[in-house]
Image (cartoon, rainbow, N blue to C red; front, top):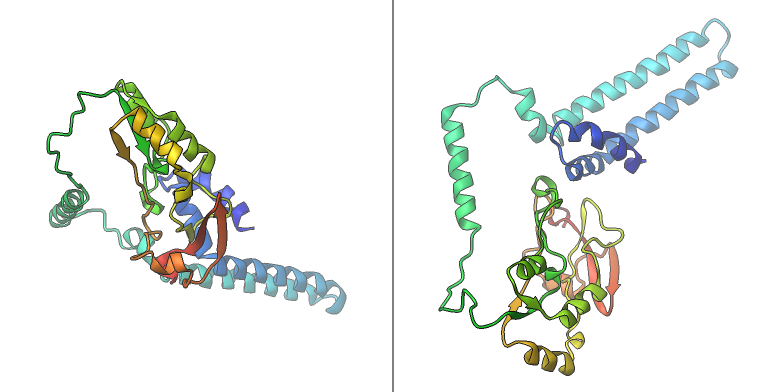
Amino acid sequence: MLQFLINILTPIFEGMGVSPTDVSTYVNNLSGYIYAILGTLVLAIVVMVAAQFVVKKGKRHLVRWGAGLAWVLIVTILANVICFGPMYNNLAPILNYDGAVSAESAAASEAVIEKVGDEGIVLAENNGVLPLSNTTKINVFGWAATNPIYGGTGSGSSSNEGNIDILTSLKNAGFEVNQEIIDIYTEYSPSRTLAGVGVGFTDWSLPEPPAKRYTAELMDNAKAFSDTAVIVLARSGGEGQDLPAEMGPVIDGTIDNMRQTEANGNAGYGRRSPRHW
C-alpha cells in the first residue's frame, strides 16, 4: 500500500523539486497516520453499508452522513497533527513564510555553506608522487572503483545520469587498469543497492570482498602489472541515513538486526538509520 502511494506521489512532488528519496522517506515516516486514515475510511464504509440492514428506513441517511463527516473530521485532525508535528520542520517555511528572506539570514546561510565546503575537503600531501609520469598502468583496488558514490541520501541524493566513473576517467586519461582486479569486484557484487534495502533501512556492512579474494597469485600478477596502485573507498551517508559513529557494534552484531545478508562470504548486517538506534 505504501509503495503504491509512493508511486502515485513521486511524479507529483518531483515536479515541485522534491527528490524521489524524500517522497519515499516522508511516506514511510507517516505510515502510522496513513494507515489510520485508511482504517477509519474502511470503518466508515462498513458503517454506511451496515446502515442499510441495521438502521430503520428514514434514518439511514443520517447514519451514513454521520459516518462520512466523522471520517472527514478525523482526516482533518490528523492532517493538522502531521503539519504541526512530524512534518513541521519541512512545512514551517511555507506555514510561516512572509515572502522575504532577510539579508542577515542569507549571509548566515552563505557562511555556513562556505564552512561546510571548507571542512568537507580533504587534501593529501603529494610529496612528488603526482602527476604520474613514469607509468601508464595502474592497479585499482577497492570495490567502490566499480561502484562509486556520487551523492548521499535524503536531500543529499542526486541523479547519476551522465556521471563518469573513476575507471573510465583513468582510461580517458590514457591509463590502463588491471582488469583481473576489476573482475573480482564486479563478480563480488555488480551493483551497490542490495535487495530489501529501502528508506529508513541501510546496509551498514563494509562493502568489500573478503581478504581471501586477494590471493598470492593475484597480488603477484598485480606487482608484475604495475608498481603503482590506487585505492578507492566510499561509504554512503546523508540526511537521516548517516554512517554509524563507529562500526564495532555493526561488525560484532550487537546492534539489533533487521536483516542479515551474505555476499560471497562477506557477512553484513542491515541496520536502521542511526536516528532509530
